[in-house]
Image (cartoon, rainbow, N blue to C red):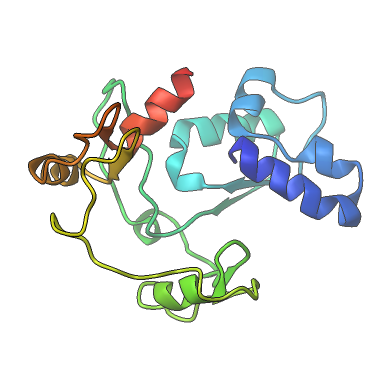
Length: 191
């Protein structure tokens, strides 16, 4: 889990499980760096599983002495990328290497209109949020995209997307940049 997700869950679970919310919810980095006090955990639940290195997940499970591992993530999540290129990696759909036992379709973060827009990809998704009309859908092209905004970060999922944005001359504004999402994450982690 990310720090933000951990803090969000601690707040939501404090009423239900009390002090355990602060001791049982940890980020992956915290587990790998600090380990656990001498205790065994029955279940190890890893949220955002696909963006974690699988070796890190297994190491954390062994440190926790867990008897059961539950991996939770978006089946369409951009997966872990090895920035160091230490060994060859390949991507496999989750259901080819493990059992996808349950498809969770409830969204706590997305408002109703966003969930409705996602229904094309996640058939049956619904939201617990009551806000609506937060989303305006509009395609983009060179005519609609403001390319001269100052201090603007343009993000792409792939190198091809980054090249396309640069070809459209995005990122020309003062202190603006065009990056791949993982490049931006890498820069953010160095701050």
